[in-house]
Image (cartoon, rainbow over the protein chains, first blue to last red):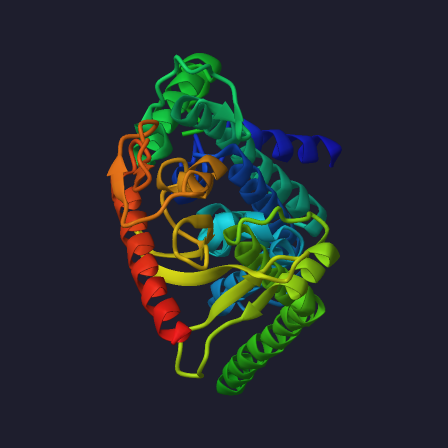
Length: 205
Length: 207
């Protein structure tokens, strides 16, 4: 069991990564990664949602009638996301204002729904919890890397603190959506080209 | 016999959906009720802060102090119900009127921009500017909320014209944001409209 947990955990971070292997959750990857701070909040929200919705769906998996399973999943996911949204509004009002509709859009993030469909429905709660958590982490670290470079190149700063001197001319394209496409493509290229070797990659793709 | 099980299954499906919806929506409702006051309070504090910054005051971090300062110095100034809401700001020491704050909404590049703007009673210069709501591109148009952008209006007066970032020198010029010309233009229009409206309202109310 322990070995399996470890395998599930590592799978989502590497060879089964939701962003650069499964190419899921791209909309939010493009939308929130131009400023590092927003990305961190978004990632926390997503980790919370995937973990708990995976766990809950797995707990209920024996009773959920298969023909309405998607309705149930969306309901559960939506409830957790709204709770995250309310919590951010109550405790971090400024960040909530900056994120605007993006927190609510976690509901439609393919990774959350994908994990409940593909994993939670057929695995026990404990393992689903780990899977949800590691999927969230797998998504988060990719976004954080992309956000780091986009903010650095696009605004010359990291976490709102100026890093590059006045000589630096901001790459405006980096803070716009096309910049995220470039960054993501470069990221996938580097990871697939040099870290995950093609001959070992057959299963992953 | 087979038909009966099918009917049963269908009824179970419906009841299950009902039940689970009830449970989860109750959970969300509780979370909402639990935080409602805090959220409303945050919202009110945010508006107060917006009005005070527009009035050119240094705003205390502590929410209680902020509230006291607001209640002591800001009051609604419209003369009739039909009028738009605007605020009169008094000096905390002398009690004299030090300015007026107007809140205005206008079209930005992606969505509405709401800002509060404070002017001196003689409409000679701007006391401060604060963006209450905007949905511009983060990192580009979104930079209008940064303090260098808002602070540059202090002491100036419109109608404004745009000049490239870092070059404004006259009293009716302000720095546009490089890469966000549309947003800068939108802000210029909203500010000019607000100032024109403010002038009209203040003149009418003086009589």
